Every structure is written in structure tokens, then in C-alpha cells.
Length: 89
Image (cartoon, rainbow, N blue to C red; front, side, top):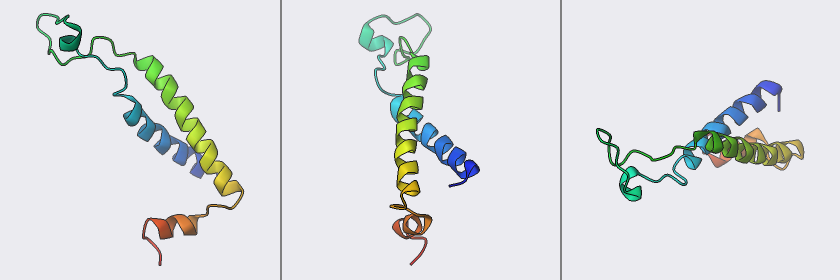
């Protein structure tokens, strides 16, 4: 795996993980009973975005380490990935 490929894979894993982590722990103003006048009742009370960015970075780093280890030990290669997603017979 080249450096550019590794960065691209980590970037994709990070974004996918972010969208998976974003909904965790979100409480709406309606659920809390603290609706701010002029705002949507479904708006979050507290976003905790920095905490979610930290968790995203940690989780995506762990997933990337696993993928890298699989490629480094040759248990996974580009041909097997292509066959798995149906791009090669």
C-alpha cells in the first residue's frame, strides 16, 4: 500500500465513521423540554461535535490499522477486494 493509497483509504474511513458516529447521544430540544423560542423543536440541545470528532478519529484509526495489517500480511489484496465487490471475475 503506497502512502497516497493509505491516506485515501483513511480519509474515506474517517468520513464513513463520522456519519455513523454523528447520531449517537443526540437529544432534541423537545426531548429535553427546553425549546428555545424561534428554533425547531427537533434541534439538538448540545451537539458535542468535538467529542464526536475525537471518537471518529480513534475508531477510524483502529479500522485503518486492521485494514493495513490485512494488506501487509497479504491476507487481503486488491484482486480479492475487486472480486468481492464484483469488479473482476
